[in-house]
Structure formats: structure tokens, C-alpha cells
Amino acid sequence: MVIPEGSSVASRAYHVQERLASLGPGPHPLHDIATACELDDSTTSRILTAGIYRRVYERPSRGMYQLARPLSDLVYALPHGPTRDQSQRALQELRAATNGGMALLYMKSPGMTAGRQCADMAVGESDLVEFGMTPREVLSVTRSLRAGASGRAILAYLPEPIQAHVLAEPVPDGAGPGAIRDNTALAASLVEIREQGYALGYQECMKDWNSIAAPVFDGDSITASVLLLRPALQMQRPPSTYIDATKRAAAALSSS
Image: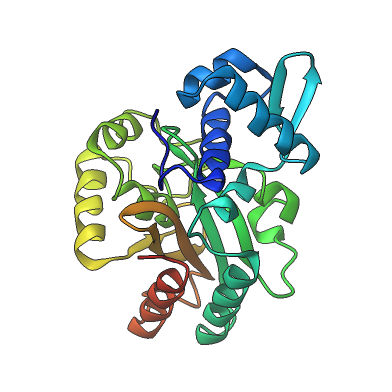
């Protein structure tokens, strides 16, 4: 039985969340969930039943379970992860240090799924029209790790087989004109991120927007990244003060 962070009740509960999320959307049979968790059916059933009362899971039919909470909520279930108050404080401080830049927290998809999803944001009075999305949509869309500074800041610290899988993916539809399309250049960027501790994106996810991203860790494991977005006309080349502020925000949300 493989359960991260020891065998506490909280660790088991998060492990079940993580494994259920990795099975994909929709309901799954109890036995399939237990098998994915490497737990027996009885233990898994108790954890799922307790989670139903906390609105973490839903049971749409007998013996079938699915996640009830948004995938982004899982970042706050990490044993040593940040709280919502901590993430908001770090993101708001990043905004203040960068003259009102848009600050977002992207979490790594659970398990072996190679993706990321926005878990929190501090965007001031922006209505996110610049993204072509509503706040609800931003928080519910899972994005590839291939395109975008926030994705590459996570991808750089993932195992090589996952990196190879992501590099084999096509550049996502709708990626910005600065998306790195050459796999050799993309792989080199991951090495650079590990060396310097941050990623820079130039119109990579969206036209006319540049970005800085820094990794967030839970111990030695990459869990998320902090992203700073500013219009390209206002941030043609990210100043060192903005890079340092982004790294400080990520460090504030990391645990040793």
C-alpha cells in the first residue's frame, strides 16, 4: 500500500482524492478506486462515505463514486500545503510588488495526469475579459503543461517519462504566438528553469501577455506554480524585482 506522508487519516483521505481524480471525470466503481489506491474495499468505502458528508465526493448510484469538489480544491488538501488565506495573501503581495500584475496559483493535476489547473487568483478589478474567460471558467479548465510559463515551471521538476509524454503532445489549440513549438528548445527551457528557479513566457499562452512563473514544492515534490501576468507592452522584459517577487510568493506557499 503506497500512501504519501505516512499513514495518517488525512494522508489516506488525500491519497483517495488523488487516485480518484487520476481515474478521470465521472463516477467510478468502489473496487476500481480501491485498486487504484492500493487499499482494500472496506477502508476505501469508509473514506469515501466520510467524504460524502463533507461534500468531497458524490455517490450518483450504488457503489459508484466521483469527486464533488473542483479539482483545484485538492491543492488545499495537501498535508503541508497552503491554506486559501495563505495563497490569497501571497498572491496579493505579489500584485502589490509588481504594480498590479495578475497573480495566479496553478496546481499540478493529481497522480500521473500531465496538466495544471488554476486554484486561486488575485486579479484586482479585472473581469478577465483579457483571457476570453470568466473567473469560473479560468478555475475549471485543465491546461497542458506544454505551453505557458506556469506549465513549464511545473513540468521542469516532473520525472523524465512525464516530460517525454508532454513533449509528445501537440501544442494546444489557442496557444499564444510565443509558444515553444520545437521540442529541443522546450527541453532546454526545462533545464534552464531548474538552474534558475523560474520560467519566463513571452506571449506563450496568450497574445500580448508576458509572464513569470516559479515552482511551489511540498517537500521534494512539485505541486504547483505561481504565475505573474502583465501585458507585453507593460513588461517587455521582466525586471529582476518582478522575478524576485514571484519567487518569494512561490517560496511562501512551499513547505520543506
